[in-house]
Image (cartoon, rainbow over all chains, first blue to last red; front, side, top):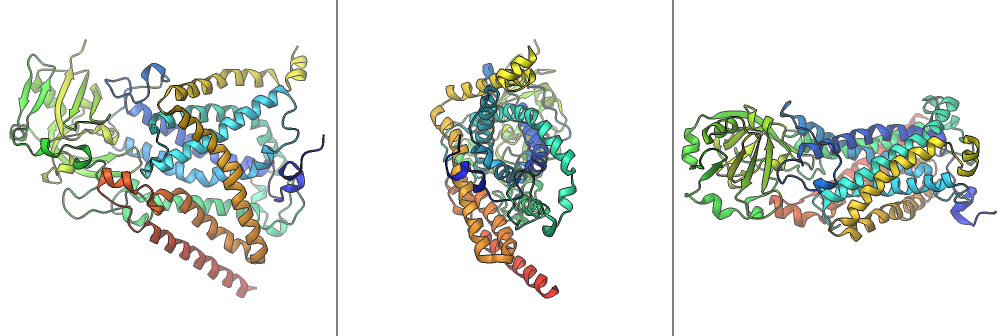
Length: 413
Length: 142
């Protein structure tokens, strides 16, 4: 059966660099990056503790059983896992594109299928390519707040990740023998030692003269990864490197004042401007024998503690500040709940899925878990949650609820 | 039995078992997407991801690369590599560079994507400048 003209003919693809070794080498690097991105992604899902209260964003009845009690130590845990998720994700993009470039002739293989096994393999490869590109596209758009896709990012990115990981595991299992054979036959790193004059085509590749060596290709792809990383990493590491990352969404240094640091959601955006300036503000604590209400002055009169803690956003940026306020454990004790099993924190923010969050027992019990009233020695600004906000070590950024109106401590069963 | 399966199926039984074990997991995830809000749009974006990459993005940069090979000759990599890095920066940071993402970004944070296009242009210029200098240096050493 003669193949149709165009990309289905072997002569159409001109690069002598393509072949099993190049694909294996690019794939091996990509696999390491994807393993980090996927692991930290699923860890982030667990860090939101979808099993507690109304934390779940994807339907908990149709979720994988990957949830555990997210710890509070080390305090930079979520900053690290989520910083890796976003930054290693960016680093992986050039390798993903190069890997797909190296195998593009396979898309036009002729005949398209020759056995049932191959039908399944091509179906899996289709799912893999679609879900891989989809995950990177939606992730990259989300960190820059471009919601042109107009669907729920979390749901799509989460289930897309399951398709991606499952089809990737299958792909690696099927291709591992091909990969190992390529390394055995050509030498694991030997092709990287060949300069342009010594670059030979891999078996089956066309005998056209190469325009770049294989190590040149790796250097170019690696330089692309380094550029994407440098352009963003400053927002993860935080001040003073923030401004060095020229294209990071959160590179702005706002000012020298105690409240001049990045805001995930401003008070105006959350629609809480009136409630938070109200002198009649009272914090309500529930769960004990009777409801307890406290004014901001009464809260300031309670024992205070200062902790230097990061806010680490799911979008990969971090800001570390010195927070002062009342330990949550102290509030639980005053409310009359000795060892709360969980705590539901509600914001004065009228709308939005993230106007409440439920904390686990370990998070309430950590001595540095605070209902913060002040930051860097000054009162919280409206944008940072005045009159009071939650700050818990290693908690995903948005679960550090701002403009706290009430805390419901759950009594152990 | 194994030989017969291999003949009809075209691969080892392990191949079949692995797919029978993991493809249901992908089907589970796709079913959750199909039941989510705006499901058609998610599925459309999934399919478009593969199609746009394989049949649009990749052929486009392939054609550009051929063009560079023809016009730049022996200097091709000095054009290719800065173009690749600049192109990647634009592709990944397009929402900020183009300002397309500014609406929601400004709404939530009160900030704006200011100067992103300018910094991308300067970075692109710097990349080609370094690459051009490297080309000159290489030429003078020869």
